[in-house]
Image 1 (cartoon, helix red, strand yellow):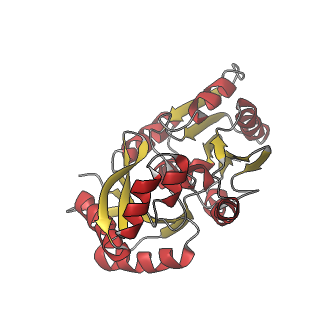
Image 2 (tube, rainbow, N blue to C red):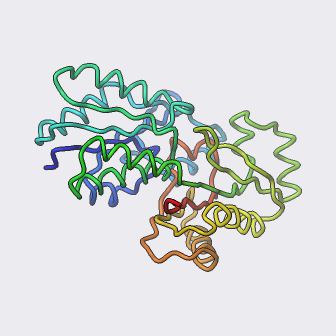
Length: 285
């Protein structure tokens, strides 16, 4: 067991196999359909989420993990021999997850727990946790691990293309008429991370142009710099993700591992089925 345990939540979009390979614990975001609750990653995924949404015509709500869930994760790490814990939480701008983790940490006054508001989400957050795990395995101190992860956040960019505005209309974020007109005109908005939130950046006509624009924007951010890491995101659209990745790889020079990840229900419920996107980490200048 590692002396420093890395914990995050499922809004990091880390595939379970990747998290397991790097000994990263993920505390699940909760999805609520009426009185029924499901834990992201073990009880519900994006495909299951939208199969039910399309059947019932209603979006579920999501909630942060409870302090008790974080306490269980922290205790498990200490029981396995960890001397300290670093917990990377989804941005406090979109979730109460960070507050729950801080509350949980306060119940372990005798233990060394550092809770970080990543001010990021999806694989932006996930790459921070991965960088922390790799730095730990390379022998870095806790302070060095945190510094490297926070530095990576400033070099990470996410761009994604929505397939439809239907789900945003269901959530109330856009009006039904506006969504209907956008779909009629085949408008595909581009999403990005802005001030710790997943936000609409611009609108593009046709899926083909939206994919190309997302790739173009990522390329502009990393222009002149080596790409350190890359992930392809999708929401219940693995085949679209595969085709999108082919276009990304043709446009952006990168020879490392590409992680293909579901956005995961805690985030995808706000974006909708069919989303594809790319996350890139640029090397320091």
